[in-house]
Image (cartoon, rainbow, N blue to C red; front, side):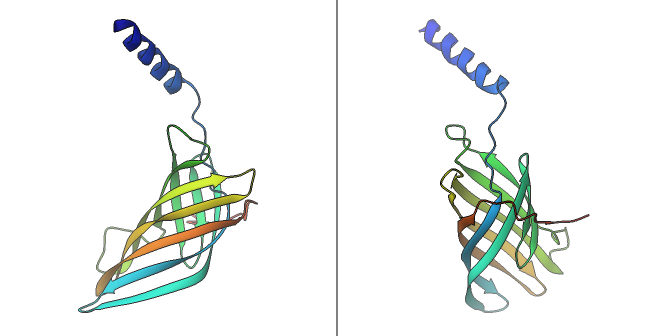
Length: 154
């Protein structure tokens, strides 16, 4: 039994010491988001044919869409080049939720850069003056080429 534990420990050390593979989300994505807002009453809306452009360097990335975002990709331990998650923050996000402009998203990612295919699906929560909302996101990769997104430019 100790021999197996030692093998597992050595394998874990080898994985930790090896450079992490990157989940590269760079490209142009087309999709939709469906939102539910609350501002004293509940309303729903869907935006289709939304284009999201992502430029990634290392594990951080910039997003240009209807709003600009910054984000980080988190590769899956078993399939780090093709699966993982992404976390995004709207560039206007701050600690004053009453003024709006705040949005945080969590997206599951799957991508096959060789085939030029990928999916991003997830949820976000956002605020606006007098209310808040949640959205479900669903996007497909339409081009793996770098769109040179600026995102949250300084």
